[in-house]
Image (cartoon, rainbow, N blue to C red; front, side, top):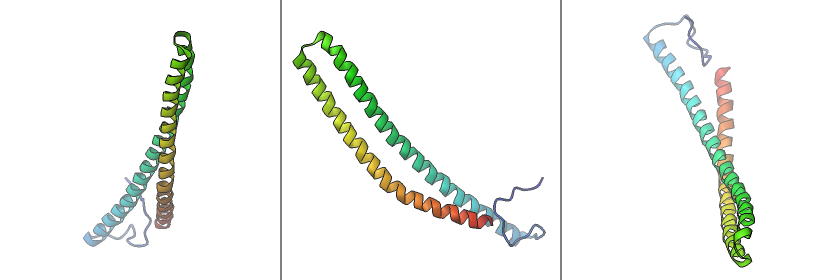
Length: 131
């Protein structure tokens, strides 16, 4: 079969053979897969961080929706002051969760800015290597 070429190089050509040429081909392939694995690692880090931030905001949304349902349910069985006390505690917890989610989003955004810069640089380098 025909080998899959992942990186087009000026030297060695297909007709070149010998141990030094094969060692050079190995290093070319190793270099290619090393660069690709770095890009996959950066992509995985970025995606997992964004999923975590999205999950934090989704949990916050579910908390406030359940808070509404809880208050509507508690008004049937508890007094107004008890309902207000429980609502106040849960609302403060929601505010703390929101503060934590915003803090996390800000830090992920500042970290991902640098990672995306590296990712763009690596993408350009890989395009140059493929030419």
